[in-house]
Image 1 (tube, protein in one colour):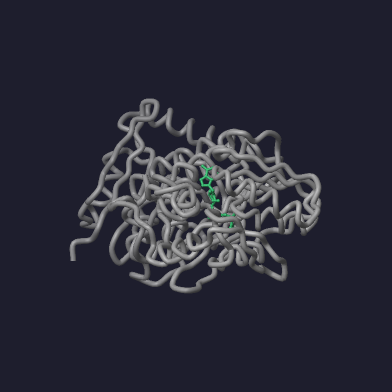
Image 2 (cartoon, protein in one colour; image 1 turned 30 degrees about the vertical axis):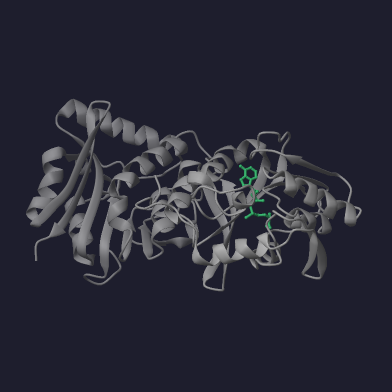
Amino acid sequence: MGNKTMEYKLHNTTNLYLERVRSHKEAYTTEVLGKEIIVYPNVMSPKYDWSPRFHIENMPNQKGKEFLEIGCGSGILALFAAFQGAKRVVAVDINPNAIENTKANFQKYNLKNFNILESDVFEKVEGKFDTINFAAPYHGSKPKDILEYGVSDPEYRALRLFLKNAKSFLKDNGQIVLGFSNTGDLDLLNTLFIENKLYIKNFKEEENNGWKAYLYVLEPIKFHRKKQEYIYDDDYFWFKKYKKEIILGKVLKVGYGLGFASYFIKLFNKDISSLDIVVNPDSLNGNEVKTYDGKTIPFLENVFDIVICTYTLHHAESPEALFEELCRVSKSKVIVVEETYKNFFQKIQLTFFCWFTNRHAGQRVNIIWNSYLSSSRFIGLFKNKNLHIFQAEDVSRRSYLVELLAGREER
Ligand SMILES: C[S@@+](CC[C@H](N)C(=O)[O-])C[C@H]1O[C@@H](n2cnc3c(N)ncnc32)[C@H](O)[C@@H]1O
């Protein structure tokens, strides 16, 4: 998982930052957004880092909220949550100096209803919160001392634990606020969002001094009907198989459905357009899908580098004609995932299962007996267009197959 082709190491601006923080042997103060903040030695310092200011300016207002902060450092973010009127603040850190530092800042401002404790991520946390905040260390390298836990999270262990467990400390309709950076492993971060079924509700970024700070507001994905989570897991299963193809280039996704596959693709490649014949009200980012008549793709020839169509051809009146359209608008690759059969009984089974799954997922789709494809008819689509098949995978589901074929035209 993650984009780990080389050892994780610190960004070049981070070493200078650490040097400055280490130069302090006594407590000192700094001012952020008009408030004086005490900073202890060996604690992450807002004096030398602009990102806490960016984080405070962009995090959702905490008035009346119960706020949990993982990794509080000097306590600056938890303090501003309290200044905004949070009704309860719990702040934890793995660094004992950070705990003393945060307590000193809360006492300085005579704040009430706070609880500050040493904890490895959620280890000592109890209860549920409206907001769970983590300005995460950006790097995955090994920290040399307790201060460096502020910049380095070995192999992103804390980040993984945070994203995996945050949901169980979140109230209904609660939000996760995560600070990260372009200097961290974004491939891993996006993969963790998908695997933990988290949706990016809001995203902000700011660039300064040669690097970008990111702020994500995340919410657990809501599955409104029984089979929607099954579809999510299945879409992710296939996404992992074609992911390497969609990282670069202009992508078209035909058949938006609940929007899960388009959401996954968009995390890795912003240049994606999506089409469907209807917009399902339960879909993720339903405003991003364009509707069309299911026959003529409303784009010119060769506009896209990759065209992807999953579980959709068999809902078209003529899968051949729709496939022809997929090829027309793609200048390079066409990727299709389809349920296919090899005999009559498999066809009955897959047609029933397709109807059943869509019904229980709240997807209103056409069930057209003649549009389900046998395996040979499916492969024939690619052969007839002289597409060189560069990836083929099949997975047995019940007795029929789900196949992925990816083809590129020989030019
Ligand atoms: C990027 S700093 C943010 C500090 C502070 N919130 C700020 O914005 O200035 C990350 C903080 O996470 C803490 N941390 C790292 N790993 C942790 C873990 N496993 N459990 C709890 N806190 C951790 C570090 O000690 C550090 O204080």
